[in-house]
Length: 428
Ligand SMILES: Cc1cc2nc3c(=O)[nH]c(=O)nc-3n(C[C@H](O)[C@H](O)[C@H](O)COP(=O)(O)O)c2cc1C
Ligand code: SF4
Ligand code: SF4
Image 1 (tube, rainbow, N blue to C red):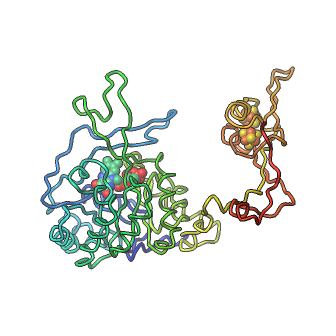
Image 2: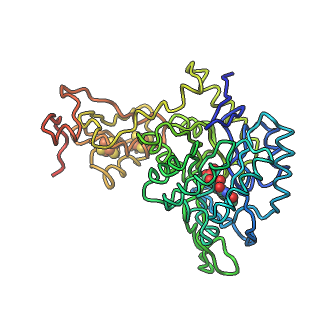
Image 3: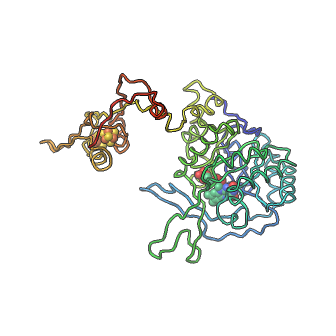
């Protein structure tokens, strides 16, 4: 079994899997149960001081897609509504009981140096292994000048991180909001402010949908609603991109990352780690399936590493060097679709997709035996992948590299006059 112990920005945990700051980390009871189940760390549900927190009763909504429940999840919940002293006492008790697990305390207070100093000291006294500054919540608290209202302004992010670092004796992660045009700017600001690492993503601004009987937006609160935070499997591609942006930015490339957003299984976790995350946080999947998913996460990543003879350190960032700007990609890398006639069930989905939605490169014919025969026209296929993505039979449509005599040639090469493009199908 591969060694999964890890360090994120100086925070040690027996494995890279942490509960994200959210309902599963609301109480000491839950965090203790999670550690018993095998979670490496937990980011406590965001604490505040002096701010009265009252929640609406109805507060979650979900996007089901083709029979899959909770592909996307949305909430209008605020930060913890439990008393600060109760949370701090429970943090102390859980830390004492589980000294080897990481407890990271998520914080959000009004934007004054005194308020931040005070909550940081209290959290450290309670035994926090690290702090996570919640500059990400896009709803409710942002109306009060906190959460994403801070994370969307790099200068505020830098300033508050500096205040925190004036008194912090444990590592400080800045939790970033995805509700920005370019996540590299707040990440750089966090680094300038002295952050030991960043965690991302918090939730994405959203309206999950309407109740078509009443036309009320969901989650409905006495007929009204408000924009909320979107998360769950549907947001993973956005989160992966943002993690990779920070990992590939020369200014923040060395900044430790705790990756969050749509992680449901070990494969998702491998993706975040390969794109540069040191640890991986999970919320929606635990709200859906419970703490037990930690077994799949640990076993899956461990087997993946063992099969490749890799360590967790070697996996971390292994795919970062493969992310480039579009203009650097090889325009002479030619691929075509190939249909395995033995596997084809003649459903015709590839034909329709290519004919109506791509490049009219699939020939289709209804044969005497009633079966639909499909074949790729190599001269018309641009290798876009669409047919292989819609085909319902695994391995039936393969994308095959077509060797050619042309050297690698990127758009940069073309525009600088240094490259020759291989011929490509022309659709008149
Ligand atoms: C109901 C709910 C409450 C949340 N509360 C907090 C919070 O108090 N503090 C925080 O930093 N993030 C909060 N989050 C965001 C999560 O920590 C996480 O960043 C986000 O859900 C993305 O991860 P996921 O796709 O695994 O759910 C909350 C998310 C949900 C769904
Ligand atoms: S790869 Fe694209 S262009 Fe080629 S056959 Fe498939 S859908 Fe058509
Ligand atoms: S989508 Fe796949 S199974 Fe269906 S006709 Fe095309 S190749 Fe055959």
